[in-house]
Image (cartoon, rainbow, N blue to C red; front, side, top):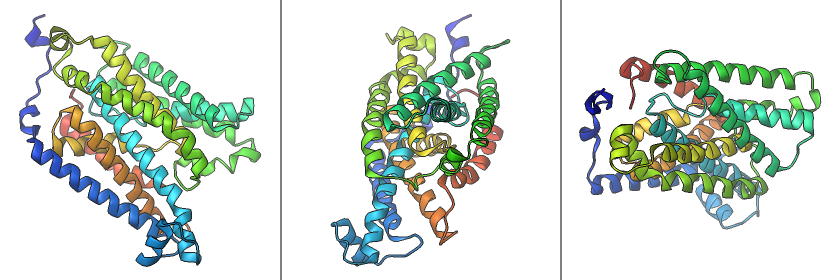
Length: 348
């Protein structure tokens, strides 16, 4: 088989390139929108807060109820930023190394594997420390990734995008069923993890953020260091190898970074689906396919998406709230169907 036969054509690549000034402009717009959403996140909820109280609360003031509400909402806003950015970067890296437009921590079963590992650790081993949650979640995410890839590789054609998506969807359903089966008989832990199982940032505290932030930073750094290698992989394995790229090592390291991000984010906020699917496709249309730009821009847009989902969940159901995992699922499911129909599950 010739090199031209093995290389997947990328007819849209040239059209998706953007000048540096356009990329910088979109990056600036993304940061501005994110900053506005952060202000809205601390201002809106069960009790709306005036702008002067928001500013006073951000400065540390707690003179009245409104300012205290701002201070209380800061941790969940920061956690939404971290989790959204992490899931978006993880999805971008997974789509790059698998060349699969449907790759996402939720769809490929990675978030489900992390959730199952955490619940097993709590229910059967009495796990209680945040560090143990993160370590077990990352291990569960890695195990789920290996399992789904192995199942998706069976049969003719190897690990095609469609087979990986089907294997991931089936595995996710199995993992979450096992999570429910473990939690239901254990009333003592079922109630506390009911909302975590859906996926949300309502239980954010500064202590939890301090624990998970370094792990997420390591995963993000690993992915960013592999950005140039991801660009080579987009040309096909043979071309990448011809350019001097160690294909297997690049795939392994980049996927490890994505697993760390997805596992740690799931440990701290529960399994939140579709962020890693939606954001990379949106960002490619705006800044192109160069992962040196795409990864950081995806982090900004992913953070903005999850903060916005948290705001919507708090506003439309107040004085109660809808968890962000439900909001992202309502947005992501139609987007998933659109990708399948439009791209016919071809490789990136």
